[in-house]
Image (cartoon, rainbow, N blue to C red; front, side):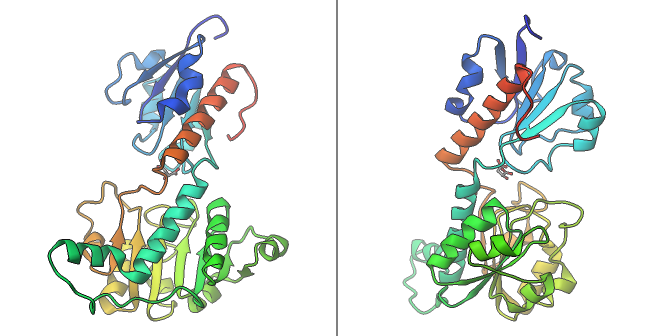
Length: 311
Ligand code: MLT
């Protein structure tokens, strides 16, 4: 591609400021159009996506010149990695661009859940003045159980500690030293389930984490537990969650992600005790700028034949 234009298809909406390194490069031609609508798919060398594009083997077959798929975000579960590997296509992501936004959103969800802010807001807007219906709980002194202590989980722990929560963590890859450094206590998965007042998951969706909090494991949690999922739909099994919300064993849940999205028909959204947002944890000005500029830089690096940073 040295003396040819490198064609990049930007299939999902992305920060144009973040994309500027690509938009301004004279070696690159960017087309901003969804893969289902774009023409001349066989002419593209690179495909940039968020979560709105599913990069299947068929999509890759329709793009025979494709050499790199870049995910402006963290989760690559919308990309068929095996199919990419078989075709020699490099897959990269932007692993840290939206860490803070996601940790902050998770924290906001926890506070909303504990103080029933969305419910109280909806009640007041509907014309009620109900000071009795929204008794909450303090976060201070409560135990937050974090499942998955990577970038997002660790940032969340600092925020929780500043609210005087104690933080316990389950992460098979975490060392004692790192746990000490962060002031958190390591637990086995089942120990965490039995001890935490609030449980939040921050793992990718894999065959090991799918349904990790299912019927059996949710039964091991404390009565009155609150659950948070701002990671990926399906880590907390939705049928199991609905069941335990109905019995009252789970006092409330806050969800940003769902097994199927859009989640307008999801019965969990209708529960009074569920606070839900439409997969917006990474939707801040800062995060979107970060992830788009991170993948732009990486694609340019790839184009120059340098090793990809986050593949
Ligand atoms: C991610 O994996 O980065 C988030 O889910 C945000 C997004 O889908 O853009």
